[in-house]
Image 1 (cartoon, rainbow, N blue to C red):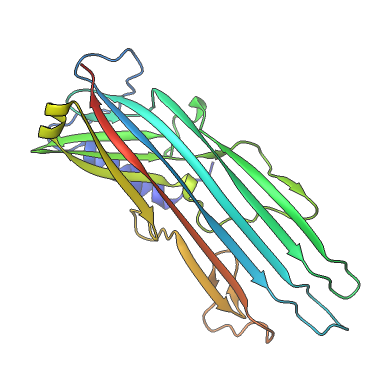
Image 2: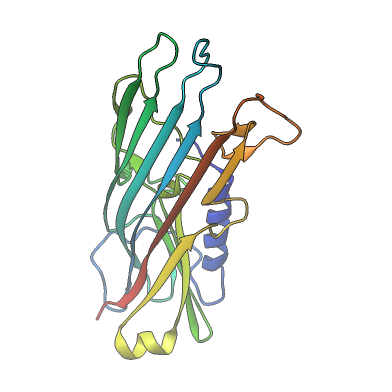
Length: 266
C-alpha cells in the first residue's frame, strides 16, 4: 500500500501528542479487557464528495478526432473505530472495534465521434475497513491521548480500503483516480476539558474537514477550466497553451465530519 507524506505528518503529530507531559509515550495496543479508569475513545464519522471531468469534442463533425467525454464520480463512506487507552493517556496502535464501508460510483459518457458510436459505461468500487494484517501500516486506525494541564488532546487517524482488487465496470470505462481520496486520509484532533470528563464520565467533540485537511498541501477541493487542464489533478498547466480547441473542465470536492468521544471506564 502506498504511503503519502500526509501520513508521515500525521504520525509525527500523534507522536508529539504522546510525548506531551503526563502522557505515556509507549505505543501499546490495549486489546485486553477494559480496566477501571481506562479511556474508551471512539472516532467515527461519514463523508463523501464528487469528481467531474469534461473534455469537449475536438475536430469538425466530418473529421472528429476526439469524442466529447464526460466523467462523473460520486463517493460516500463511513467509519467507526474504538480504542482503549490507559488512564494516564498514551497511544493505541489498534482499535478494539472497527466497522467501515462505502462506495465509489462513476459513469463515463462518450458522444458519437465520426464513425464511432456513442457509449456510456459505469464503474463501482466498494470500500471496507482495513484488516488486522495492516496493523503496521502508518494509516491503520490509531489514536493518541495526551493529558496536559486542564485539557485532554486527542488525535486520530484512519483509512478505508478498496474491498476488491479491481472495480466493477461495464463497457469500456475505468474508475479514474480522484485527486482527493479523502477516505484514505481520515484524520482529526480535538481538545476536551479534563474537568468535564471527570464530572460526566464522557465528553464528545464534533469535527468537520473540508476544503483542506489538517496538514499543508492536502487539498480536498479544486477545479480548472483551460485548454491545458490536467484531469489527473484538476490543475492548469502554466505556460502551456494546450490544444487550440475548446477548454476542458475539471472539479472535485470531498469532505468528512464526525465525532471523537472519550469515555471513562467505571
